[in-house]
Image 1 (tube, rainbow, N blue to C red):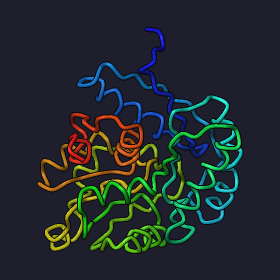
Image 2: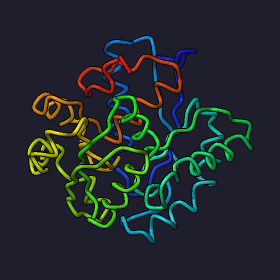
Image 3: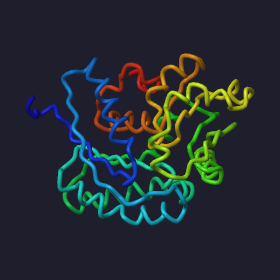
Image 4: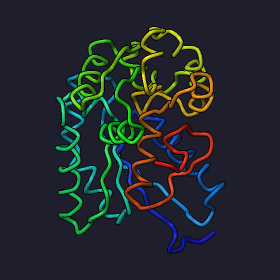
Length: 257
């Protein structure tokens, strides 16, 4: 197959130890091709060094943003998305706006005016699209980082009723977590919180694999279930003006949002 006018080039800014962004996002867009075979997507990555999910390494990784964005600018992408939700949320409420502006400025300095999406901003946008007022979430982070993520979400006027921290700090170990375990993990959240929540965030981390469990958990829970990766894919499609119908990936990608 040759590249055509319907091919979109998606730039990804990825932590160097991330093994999941470049697998789950292409898988989501691959599922979309089942209903929209006319669109084709190719992915191009720039990496930023980070091995352990600690405040110090996250801050050092963020300092590499300009360099990564400029590398992607050379490929003239149609959209750019950054991974590592916690790296942004750990910097304080609203920082995704600052990070997105920084990436946008770097791209524009090279004449690229494509949409810019952060996984942190995409998660908030996705929750808003689902009219979420109360959520519960699962993270791979140590508890202090999970608290920062919860505080960030609450600053966006979304109440976090309960969280489950799997407490894995090594980023490679996070990528190697079995996504099918999430089919049981979510049940460890507080039952009352699950009853009152509008949405379950099954993975508040692009690195923690969850795509294999999203639809199964949503079917069992009976309410919308999303992940940072699903939200990022949805935001990319939204910003490109394309249909957000992707089979088997939960309510956010059912084409109605």
